[in-house]
Image (cartoon, rainbow, N blue to C red; front, side, top):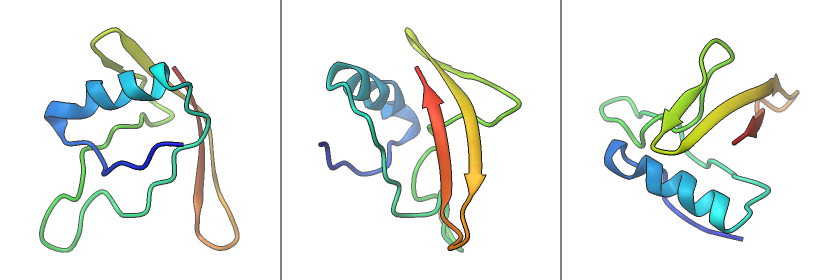
Length: 78
């Protein structure tokens, strides 16, 4: 298990490197990408329309589901 803040634009490739090296199976995001006045973290996950590449890592969104309680479940493949 890893506990970390959401990555900034300059650190997102390090974030995915850590996820891969540590064989992370679950990422829990506890904040929104932005607050009313400021960005909380960089959008480090892709959308269904577009994969994202960070250095040597291509991050693909396999599925996205909004659960009854409003939680968004994303299955990501690296």
